Every structure is written in structure tokens, then in C-alpha cells.
Length: 335
Image 1 (tube, rainbow, N blue to C red):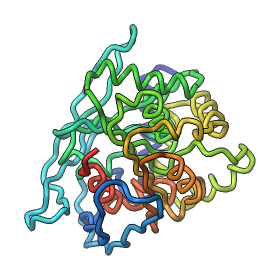
Image 2 (cartoon, rainbow, N blue to C red):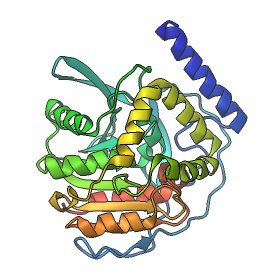
Image 3 (spheres, helix red, strand yellow):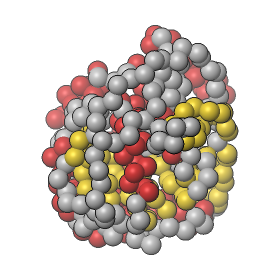
Image 4 (spheres, rainbow, N blue to C red):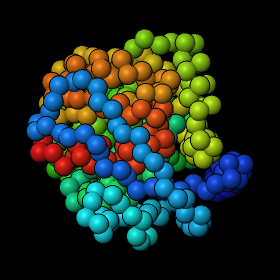
């Protein structure tokens, strides 16, 4: 099948799934503004005891539908009341960026203005998984949205290797010439972000690990039930996005990446992480339990743990407002 026809099939399948869900894959549709965190923060990096993110009430749902293409993200500005909340105020294009790594031209997207913030997606994901957070993050940072090698584009047979992916991230950082960066990684992206910070401390200024992989203990068989539970608990719009990105990446990339993640062990890398680190775990995460977050947090020299009470494995979809509050509060702290 020609690539353009395959792309059309992928898009139509995702639209069909979104139609079953009765919703469109908009980044912040039917979301209330972030709710200010109820807990006070002490200066510096406190101890690794878990803290709870407040459960917030959902505001009235805006029923208007806005048609967007994949290069459009909603941005925001601080609320007129002077608080930390955000309101959807205007539409803005994510800007295409390019850099050459060896002989390959790499493309990614960027939005907002401010200090550089790099978002690294998880297994079977893409930059699109970060859409719910873009309004808040792009209001204060220049947000760079990456697709890892083998993900995000049309599928092709490519064996995924963790060390190669870490080297690729380091090469991208050098080619993009951003200087020290803040890194947020989810799941597989958290594993890669942690290794990048451990092996290239000059690159990472602050690090956020959201439901990070890298603590061994599961086999492919023992992971089947938690993965099934995570999928059953997911919103239909997330399943539609997952289907689209999985088809784009292809079974070879996803299969080899899944096996690499299950075999990975971050524990030797963690003591070498110099950057202040925030570990975020969802209380309802069937894949990454809170105990794994506690173990990671105890091994990283300057780290703390936040538990999102109403989140599963993808808090960007489960609690985007509460997650945005936690991220921005951490990123505002002096490194």
C-alpha cells in the first residue's frame, strides 16, 4: 500500500474510534482550569515522602467543537484574576523545527516562549500525548515535542534499542543547541530521560519522571493483566490516539521497545542523576505502582515524589489540570 493511502487509513481508523467515543481528540476539551495546589512548598528539595495532589471539581463543559489539524495546539495565558489558573485564549500553531543528526534530518515541533522544556513520550506514543498540557506549559516555556526514533511516523521495521535512543536524545540536544534543558518523560520517556540525565548531566537542568519505567519485576506474561486493566480504564479518546500511534509505529518498533522496557534496570543510573527530580505516579496506575516511585525517589540524590490520587498510567489524560499545576510549580523552583 502506498504511504499516502496508509496514512489515510490510519487517520480514518482513529476518527472512527473517536466517533465511537462521542468526542474529538482536542487537547483540553471539557476541562476546567487547573486548580491551585493546596499544599505549601518548602524551599529546596524536600524529603521523598509521598504527597497528594488535591482532587479538583470539574467546571462546566464547553460544548463547542473546534476542528484542528495535527499541527495546531491550544495555548493559554494566566487568568485575569491573577491566580495560577489558565484559560484557553487563542489558537497558535506549533512551529516545525529541524536539525541534522549525522546524515539524517530530524523534525520536531515547538510551542511557546521561555526556557527550553523537552517532552519525551512513552511506549506506542507520540508528541500528541502531551496536547492536554500544552496550554499551561507553553505559557511559561519554549516546549519542544519530540517523536522518538521509530515512533510518530509511518511504520517501518526498526528494532528499538534503549541505549541507541539515549544516544539519539543526546545527539538531538547537541544539534538543537538549546543549552541546559528541563526534561519531562512519561513511561518509556521517563526511563530515557533518567538515563540522559545520568549519562549527560550537563544537558539536563531539571528532570520530571511521570510513571517512569525502569524498575524490574515484571515479565511479558505478568504484565498482560496490568496492561489490560490500564486499557480498560482508559478514556475512549485516549484509546483512539493509542490506536493511531500504534499503527504509525508498527509492531516491530513497539514489540522490541516493550521487551527492552521490561528488561531495563535504572537502579545503577539513578545515583548519578545530579538534576533536581520530580517523580509523579498515579495512585490507580496498574503498570507502575507507587512503591516503584518511592524506590526511584530514594535512589536519586535530589528527588521527591508526588502521587496523583485520581490518575492511572497516563495522568496527562486523567488529571491534566492537576498535573500541570505540579509541573509548573516544580519548574519555577531554582535548579
